[in-house]
Image 1 (cartoon, rainbow, N blue to C red):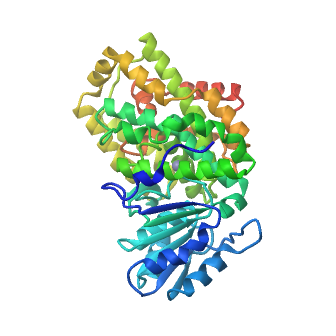
Image 2 (cartoon, rainbow, N blue to C red):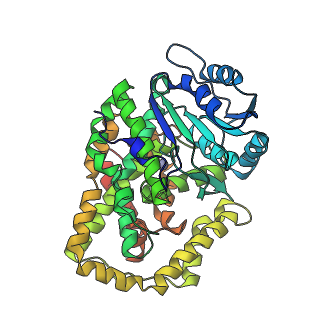
Length: 456
Ligand SMILES: [Zn+2]
């Protein structure tokens, strides 16, 4: 399967400053020529981590790139050491290392690319991806750790993205499976975004960017097995998917097309790991597993809306809401940085919902439910089908199977509290505010996932 989408038609537009995307075998060899054509003759900063990237033929990708770049420009290597996280200290290191360069080249993962976007600032930024592992390369946003909380921050578009199939095919299979898992969020995130528009919290819901990847949902499901086996054509399609998904977020000016409750659950798990000094699982594999649970919650709430059995939406008063946020996050650090950061965002959401009478908005949505239902059904996907695709890809379906297994208690905590972290409205907010996200509701969703061979 190859996508019928033409990525180039989305490039270099009013909203998308990304100039060029090259996907194919050997495109790494075009990097030096691309850099040589960019203005200026000063040094190139090459942002790297300590990982070795080899092609199937055993070629060291970094060595090839550095040699080719050195032939056209002075090169400054900026190497971030250890397990790289996009925290304040690491970002500052990258910014300082790249300070004197004319342009920045990043070779590596999604996290490294997010750091590179900040370090490059207004200067051209050329990215060579190490895998099709996440969708966050092709947009102008970075997920940074601020006060220990994962925050999506406006940064800058890469100038050019290179996805070399020789590198992607040689990447560990779990990284590309992880990219598939990240893309599987298309079966819940756009529905969350649409839902948020019913409460005036969407910051501009746009059907075009909401469905830019979702319209190819069947194609994504059909490549799962091939991605799992690292076959070239399915990986090329996946590369196209992650790029298109990034572009959709850039066009939307927010991550909502690809980031809903499944991502907040994943973010909370990462934050818990950070607070306990534990490493994170691969982002996309975690998101894929979370998506199953979110799809089950969506199914339950839609059933309640169909039956008319959904509860009245009640917005808590500020003191009650702050108590809930503090109870969820106070344990994470000694001085309350994380709970302060979460309350700063959640309090804005609470105030908006209270000021705009969210209860009345839900009643209005119920009055015209059939139209909303049709839209939501076109965006959602049966949880059974999502599990099937993960299984075909050889990707985990349970949190305990992730590259860094997650304890059941952490998953329960993340599911129960994910709506308290940020100023965005998802199905978890609707469930919580209508009294349908109690401990026993969370347990019920987990049990339904268990019945599908997924979940904890
Ligand atoms: Zn993601």
